[in-house]
Length: 364
Image (cartoon, rainbow, N blue to C red; front, side):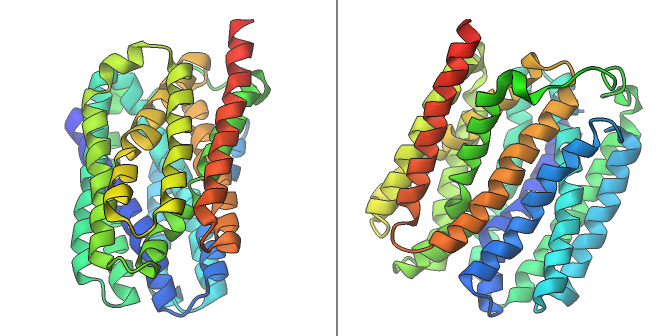
């Protein structure tokens, strides 16, 4: 199980790497404006937000649903090729792609948390970071036309779908996931400050995920060097995933507060020193906290708070990476300029303040 999950993470996050690092650049090369890029990239996270609500009563996150999502994901990514230079068709394809992605990762994350201990989960999850690095380094060298990014997106998504199917067909013993808990209550309001903090945290990542490559190259940093900046951040992430096990035995809410505060500091460094490579590399080292430790602490905390664990993971991805990613992409497209990361820092600090309210609710 460990190696099948690890291989899935490798190709899934390689696909994410293409989509996050190079697809915005490919869209810019294809002639889209910064606002159009933000609008196009907001479609996929928007679908991640809406999809979990269907699973409250109407759908079940089981093997059949997961396999259907993999099929939709491969169909959607194939349509990127003919739709690339046409805004409205490309927007529609992004909506389909986001709908499929909203199911695929929560299903696998839940299976991983059920099957592996916390230390093994981190070591399996780090293969996703390795896939992200591999694609970042390779495409940073060869990307010369928009269709280059599309071709690699298609290849990595197809591999992801095949490995996802392998998880289902070779691990039937775990097919019960989310069935025993499908009729239980699920209330977001019980921990509303936590969910609001998840939303704000991801909104603050809008500038980073959608415009960091464009932002750095606009300040004189080469595309190749920018790919190394992405890679260095992910290397730090890998180290954290490997060694984070003991940290997860401590107060998870306190860990979230620390990681969110560090994220606000990270965006401040991007704003003040956009062309200072030593400082930007130092800021990228904080990705170990603002992504790796934050992500694992968040999903582990939700796993302990909610009985419907798979649905909790869906809502985490839907509210944070979904609605947060949607609002973050639109806001970053609107605010793109010299002060973009100053605004992102203020938003991340807002998430830190909101988490203090959750801390008070927990103590009551």
